[in-house]
Amino acid sequence: VLVHELAHQWFGDSVSPRTWSDLWLNEGHATWYEGLYAEERGGPTLESRMREAYGASDGWRAEGGPPARPKAPGNGKISIFRPVVYDGSALVLYALRQ
Image (cartoon, rainbow, N blue to C red; front, side):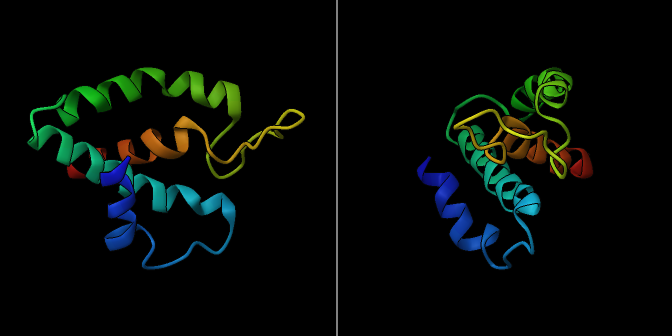
């Protein structure tokens, strides 16, 4: 969590998204750098984390809709802080790097 939030300080919050539907731009970078740091420190590889995210991505979209147009949340829930916003967005960066 600490690395994720530090990544926001340096990369993710330099420009604020125009709308909350663009939150994935901030969270994707923070999650990406968090994964790179974890791998460097002997944690799971970024590749394994991204493969896991890819395997779960169809379920995320079916459950909550695409990141920019999430389905309406249930009573008492917030729909913008979902796995697709964090790991799914990091997966986009991973794909671009590959």
